[in-house]
Amino acid sequence: MSSYEFCKTERDGKLLIVTLNRPDVMNALHPPSHVELDEVFNDFANDPELWVAIVTGAGDRAFSAGNDLKYQATHGGKRVSVPDSGFAGLTSRFGLNKPIIAAVNGVAMGGGFEIALACDLIIASDNAVFALPEPRVGLAALAGGLHRLPRQIGEKQALGMILTGRRVSAEEGQQLGFVNDVVPQAELKATARKWAHQILECSPMSIRASKEAVYKGLGEADLQKAMTGKYEAVADMIKSEDFIEGPRAFAEKRPPDWKGR
Image 1 (cartoon, rainbow, N blue to C red):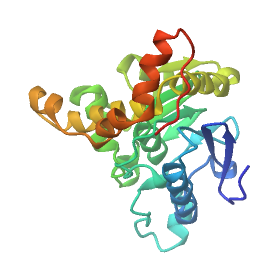
Image 2: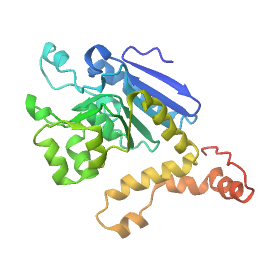
Image 3: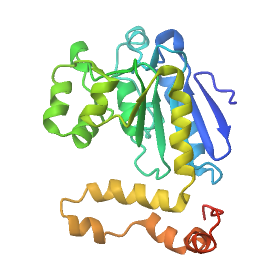
């Protein structure tokens, strides 16, 4: 476990579990918490022994209520400063090719929803609620929500949420396409771990290559350019020990011993 003030971290083999830890304000985040989370995810990105991360919130009420507006109002009301990596150290972290799972255990509003959208998978408890309500308080979802949501569920459905600030249940989120799985809250952590361990059964080199190719390929309007693009993680995969180990383990009818290099 970590010694951070505004978040907790737990290592479970190759898995890192990060818990946003401000339950008294529904895990809303303020500048000091962004600094801590930037450090947490920098360490995750640079640690060769960590392959997958789960992000969740402390308590049973909220994943994150987003920006701590009360803190902002009592500190001059200016726009909140965040590290270069963005809100929660994640929303502008574009170069990370290790997968991150959001385990959304309640309210995910504004910046909280943007954290979840910045993750690769969203596993939601059945009481989870999602929204981008910034226009209702004179703001806008500028930590990626305005751009990630339409890319993930299409323009019309995204604008239906963005222009109204309406709240969406976990079930509707799954129907819209931004939620992967909905489970009872008591099963959320176990289910997120299950997804993480399914990823960990695969070669981390293949996972990183796949994630990088998907996201960078989506930036290409032309399918041929996406498929013929040069991806650093793909080159690393082809040069890796895992690239040899996978077919060998299959031929020998045994579980592969992934090295991640």
